[in-house]
Length: 407
Image 1 (spheres, rainbow, N blue to C red):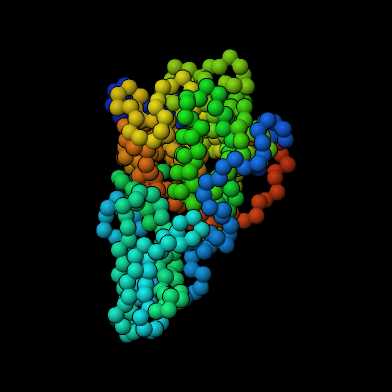
Image 2: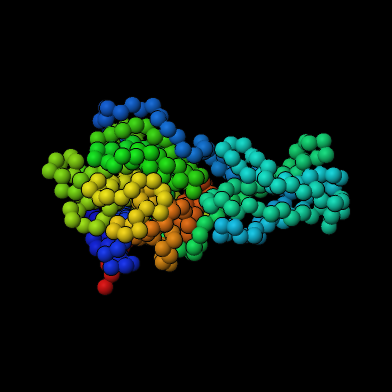
């Protein structure tokens, strides 16, 4: 049995003593979902909060492919990744020759569609049925659009295939994945999470929920908060799956490096280091075929944060000297690792997954969004869960270091 290589304990420092590194991504591969015994936590099992729309194989198929082989209206965006405020258009043509049929650009909002722009093609000939609509790019993030054709009487004639628009700053190629092939959660099953707020700064609970909401928005996945827990990820050692309360997939916890209580001490945190947080996941070693790609399926995630570090809460620019950034930025970064993102292969400090915190608003960049989109609902659902392995031994594969020190 081999063990994963550990990321470097030294942090990348883009400026001497000015920036605090954030995510040693700790990954191990396991053969089955790890679940602790019932009653391991006093928290209630009923959902406390939910982020993201409920996903199902049918819903994912509807959001990513056409409901029919020949949609009533075609839609081709000029690009699907853009900077904020960039000029983006969608062009297409009505398939039928019905007169006075309006064409509307609609945005998916929750489970309903809202019209954001409309135009009426001038005639019924093939050329006259063509249209062009402006796609709004003022709001950063991931947005699903479609084009609907509506008759003069207000009756919907049909819709186009949905398309996803990613709006973010920076380089869209600045993205990285933890493994090859990538590891990701099954987007058609909710990720159930608990929090451990022992020693956490005031406002941490709201920051965790808000960061989870940002992950849900970027991936299209659903996250359900099921309560609190006393579990500290890494209390059993590095790269060892933790025993979570039953029905829990992810734990986000604060801890003190070097805590004298073994159950409260995380092997992922080192006293005196400049690491403020660690996020990662455990996943099945054998990839599965989903759609046109192969993927490892993540079965357990964790985030553990150093409660001795002093950062402001929230998602603003945060500190501009000393420890840069905010807890919101750190949480988004570490949760990015939880869903399968690594530090970008193309360096860009605008991205949240950049390996050091910076003084900037905590908003996904273009590269972040490209990665989150690929790891979420857009890539389809895993097949039905396979039977759990009967072996008690952890099945591991060797992975390369995910971080490298400066020289």
